[in-house]
Length: 341
Image (cartoon, rainbow, N blue to C red; front, side, top):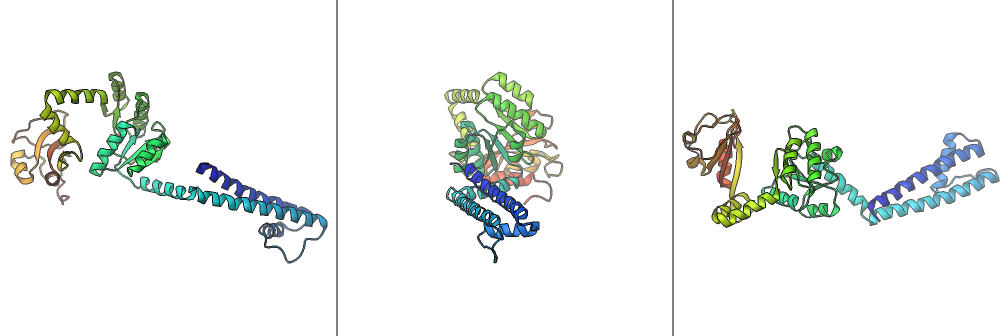
């Protein structure tokens, strides 16, 4: 029996008790002609076995009292059994855990929502965990949710195509959503639903074929990842450029062979010191130890081999590589003036 059954049994017992109170009050009022308050009082003390100082007058009233007493005892026993059943099956602790989870998710901000916890979704979660990034798993499969719980993930049982379930996962406060369901159709509807709720949300979706990838972009996905295409390219690179492939694998996998090596992207704002200055002027390599490998310009173009005279402009995105310590220094350098630690 599931916890839902135990809760239904508990609710039925409560409803039966209320019904006994209503019937008893009406019965005593009709038989004895007492006021409603007195009749209700007589019903309560009778059903709770506390009794009255005097016996009710008349055989009819006594028979009604006996029936009410027996009914009250039966319902109390049923209610007690329902409470014991709730405790024995952990339904109360489950309800408490669910409320605690709900509060935790409600307190999240700038988290990611992973819709679909299959092989792709689990890999995404593993990368988030490796760097300490918060996320919520939204899936309707209990086995998938159990797997997410085992890794300490926050979970919501539901469907990524449901607006209500997306809201329960905190889409209003999320920074990104990953549509990683096994079905392309599901990912398409997840993307449509998420984009309708949050026009400014970053959405990354999985697609199996090129045709679906195009539709996902039209539906509002910012980025579309095709696992089979990516796997094929990676395998080809391992054969054709083994050392390049090995380095990229090390540099882009959190917790890999060199966990200290990180790729990061940093937005250039008008409030930060480097805005309007060049790489040479800032002496980034000497000051931080990190290496600027590319700059995504504010117009969408890329400077993939920036020279020392490359100038940082508002809206640019700096892509750097270095150790955790070096990247922390680089992030501090680009922090808004007065905000750097």
